[in-house]
Length: 184
Image (cartoon, rainbow, N blue to C red; front, side):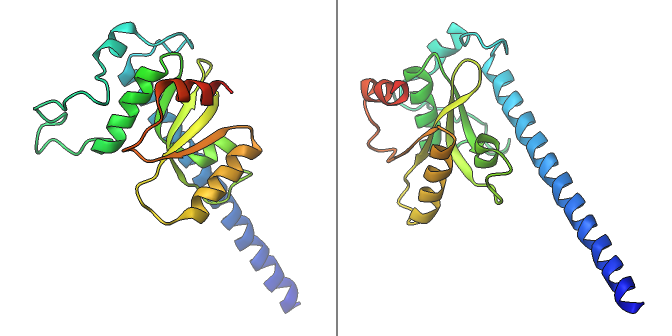
């Protein structure tokens, strides 16, 4: 009789653990969706899958342009969403790929699906077509030696048909090479 009671208690705890884990995963997915929606609103996208507003694209400086004299966020007002290197690559991707959406700080679980990856990993940039389907992912190689993590990301993304690249932010490919890679 004691074994039956112990088995019942363990089953209840296992069920609670599973429910809590799934609820937390759902909350994380909702947070990522809100973050992506916020970025789209900040960019001025119409949300209908159309091309981005031409004014915004014209205001985005090229990556080789001089950095603005004033900081993007006044001192004491919080820290910028992207560091300098990521912001430059983001602007370069936006100007080089006007027909694509560029989402910084994407989630591997959101791209490949929760069931394929247990632990989430951050992707530097997710490149989406106008229908917001991820077609490619770019990670910046900042001299990190976590090649196993990069290999895992590459394998998981290739399994769902998403291209993966790891670039040094100091030596980005040319615009033609980028267009050839993403359209291949």
